Length: 463
Image 1 (spheres, rainbow, N blue to C red):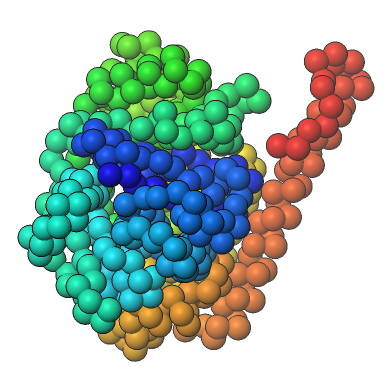
Image 2 (image 1 turned 135 degrees about the horizontal axis):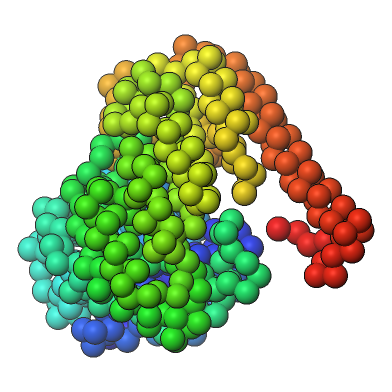
């Protein structure tokens, strides 16, 4: 059996390693299935090139995984068209966060044969074997499928994999790692090589805008993480790790366990992660810094206590400010993520957000404020339907969610035009502040060059 896994092009210059597809490739190969990767991202192939490739090569299956988003939705429709036009069309399997909440809609829009709902490693192996052996699919948990042109069957959801350390490492060797390791983050030097890995799966928090459907948190053994990092260092000369799981800073005990293990192992890599500001206290941050942490990406969302409460963020403004100040004090770069337009937010709250960023953002990377999006599967999506602001998944993708920087659903008392005007002015202010700080940095560099005769200067380079 042969399967082609498609890494779609997200229209950026550099792409991050598709770690989810890497895990899927690994479990398939371990079960005797030949896996090939079609890297649209690396080569920027036009979508129709997939049709040509399928016409030349014979595959039993083809798989694509997508998250929710307007661009990803358009991309999966275009790639589906390319697959469906192939003379040698394989069995088409679609997965990921995007189609999982409403598989029936995606089956009908893409004409895929099967959708894998949620975590896919166990499901996809059982599915591929069942199809190859011409067995009934009704007993396979975690899938939805078309039994005929117009009939969709949605099976029971599959239980989560309890022992995630039993999942084999991503099939790094099947992917162009020498390309993916060039991915840049704000703390990178020109000599760094970066790859993402997971320290665990899931999250214990329940923000109303999060479309993650998996319940609870499952950590990896720190020793397994260390073995993977050491492998990547030896095999690909990786110097920088980006932990891509929803939340590495899940608890004090977990942070301490991982950091102490990293320090004991004398890991020679720097790393960044997603964090929670309620855990960003000086002693823990100092330990993280000692263990190699250089960047923490924080989900701040709003600088207003009532707005944070409405979105079920389990965070306060006091915790946010204290945590950001502590992070800066320890010399760790904080990532600032703020969204606007959740239930009960208004123009005054947006101004608080802007003032916060103007005060604390050091311009390590450009940060703007985006409108909140009620993706299918999240609580905010169902709230919007209940309030008559949204009809269903079709309304979301086909009529409302046309760009991530524009309103999908307006939960405020502002008109749509007032909302966009306010966000326009807010982001103009933030962009101006970013370039002012970057300009000042370049001025200092120039003065150091000419006034101090800095012989290490190597030209004005874009960062």
